[in-house]
Length: 477
Length: 90
Image (cartoon, rainbow over all chains, first blue to last red):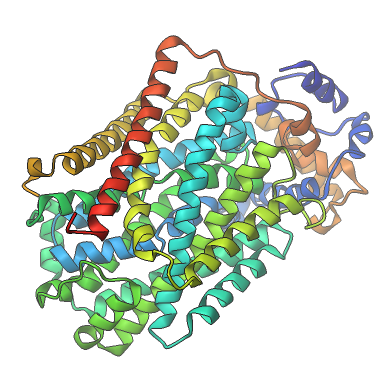
């Protein structure tokens, strides 16, 4: 603890380590009251609701526990349903349409387990330090490594944002909506979500949109999948994909990139901080993250199942985009199924556009040390909102350019996400193993084994892709 | 930690009695605001304090540099693969 923190801590009557103490008001508290902001008040209100749910006992205990989870669930579900975005759902759809029911179904489950392992660490980091990921990287590793890390994030986020608007355009294109109206409407939804000036409201609006990711479930049911084959695949990982091995490798990489990406680390940690979560909420945060991973895995598998009729009918979906998938599915699973699929792609694009633009804005705010909270009004945190809207607007505008290489972006975005992930994971692991930052919540042995294993797997997948690209004959390409 | 939790719970109870509605938590009652937040959650505290720089060991620096080189090389490879995908003849 440095001098200024010690001074502040004394002013509110506390002396122990700040990451484990509640700021109990003391007679000296009014001194600090002048420094309180709108953001503090909103966060205190959220914490008050949590404290009230926690303090309930007796016969209302069970209801209070459900209410407590309802209050604390959010960042984990949002990050995973946000990552079930347009390019991710298209990756899953490509898996289903090209290889049917088999290897990719359990593989998707594995990727979400990997996702849970790394995202759980961000929950602890955020709840213990009350600082965003970018801020911690700059603080602990300095500007040099911080800017590298931000470079990866900015590039990845912007390319991904473009693909979200491609998804919006493609999804609504199935219903004959003009691209400018689809993209403009999506941008208005992003604006509407942030005009509330309250993290809690933003989170609930985005969650209520995100749950429509479940549209892929009825679409999958309408595709009448062979449930016996699904069970067999889950147990045996068979049949393995066959065909061009280089393309299979790219699809494996894209499927990993559909679940584990750098923006998720930055977003969830910042959202945990903005939500005001504390160390005592870590278990609820784990539940939130596990619930998000579970829902997202189910919806991802549904997307694979929804497109397996294309595989059974031998329809080549190699270069399909959102609307083309829906159009190709229409004669096979009916208009309703195809419409649900197209709406699912649209929803995936909208929710991810909100989450990813917010992730960029959080990171910029943390690095520039300006207000970076959805609890802040526009006048107090205009650079934060400007970054959020600026990145979303720029991505939306590019999608409408007549000769913009959309195909290029879609091809690369998930692969770039996987390749940028190992350095991001290295910083994450260094931070969660840092006792000065984490105190007693430092990573345990098995968390490190899991984290390092995920990192090594991602590096191996990336190296395999690199070798296969440089030496195509190696894989018979 | 248990004692910290107990103290936090105590403070929450105090507010429960004095502020029956969360809407009453306003800037006019800083005690209620502060009682709900940890020291490090207050924006003013966060602005004034930073975690110091971590001393990176040589092994850690080598690891970070290797990962950086890995990313740059991989981006070049992605560019190659995209060019090939967009222009199959090349």
